Length: 186
Image (cartoon, rainbow, N blue to C red; front, side):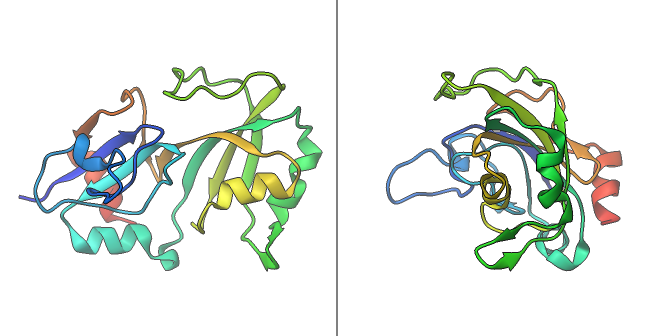
């Protein structure tokens, strides 16, 4: 039987099952054999991570040629005006490389529960919704910094039509058959 699950990765957890330095990993939350993360979220990011024992599905979710959307909520430092996000919409240049254009909009505070290491609150912040179609290392953080707004908190809330929903931090569940079919169509 194939297992595919959605996990709400907490802040400060590696997207691997082991760590020689003893940091928290997926193995501290998930005890299923032969299951692997389909992609990554960095140590300081939170939210939706898909795991499966289906190698073909991992390939479809991680290979850039499949061009599926990944949706993030980013809390950035500063008060952002919509026009200041235009470089991200056009494809901001980071480290001499032009990134693909991303959809970005200012949103109301999504009211996520506080994380284990609270975001410093001595500066005003703005929440952004960012939809990417590529997945370069630290891409959201690099894009927001390039337009002058460092990311303080980053939460992936969707991959394609699969949404994090109300799944609490550190919890996981098997995908429904409808969700699994949606992933198969990627």
